[in-house]
Amino acid sequence: MFGSLIQSARPETHTASLHGLTLSVPDALVTDSIVGKLADGSYERDEARAAMRTVKPGFRVLDLGGGIGLTANLAAERAGAANVTVVEANPALIPVIEQNLAANGNDEATVLHAAVSGWVPEGATGALTLAPGFTASSLRSKGPNTVEVPLVPITDLIRACRPHVIFMDVEGAEADLFKRAWKCPLRFMVVELHPKKYHARVIKRITDFMSEMDMVYDPATSRGRLLGFRKIWGGDEPPEDQTSG
Image 1 (tube, one colour):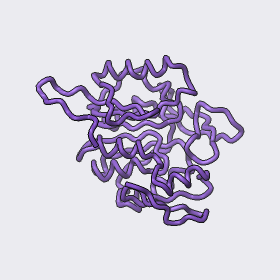
Image 2 (cartoon, rainbow, N blue to C red):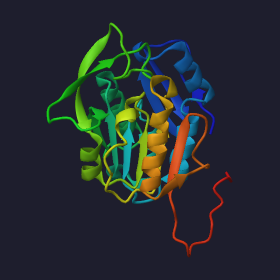
Image 3 (tube, helix red, strand yellow):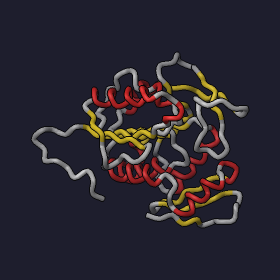
């Protein structure tokens, strides 16, 4: 479960082994902090753990904020790559995700270049502020380095994918995504919160929204800012041990 950096001296491309996967990322897209996390295996460790606990064979998975493709690859290994859709706003990361999916035999996954949003008219775009490295680029931040990206409403994505599992790390854009009901066979949802970018009422809205969908807090996939929910199982089913592992 620990990562080992195969190339360690700031090469043009960093290649790391994480959770049995081979992942590469250009040096131009990383910071020293990201390189360190790739090297010691802590890069998106909690997200990886959540993916390994929630995704089952045949599940359809929607990965919002694909990064370099770690979660998407882990989901593809478990659900089948054809069942995975990855959405990423940063255009520089699209070839990275595609290459990392292909390198791990998961190139049947669908990769979309877009920023997920609330309702917007067809063809709408938004200004993505690019941060040093790739992990903090955001629609909700201001800065000199921006790029226009297509916006896609979350309800459109859910209608098209009908996911059983949703992973969401969209750097604050989640504030606008929990307003209109989702119609899908959702079993698990894992969202990274960004409380410095919005009021605490947004977090209440998220938890209330998920409760209305018959979803409950999931301690097995929650840690720190990572908030997990799972479907409330039927009353005739035995309780599950959600804390082991």
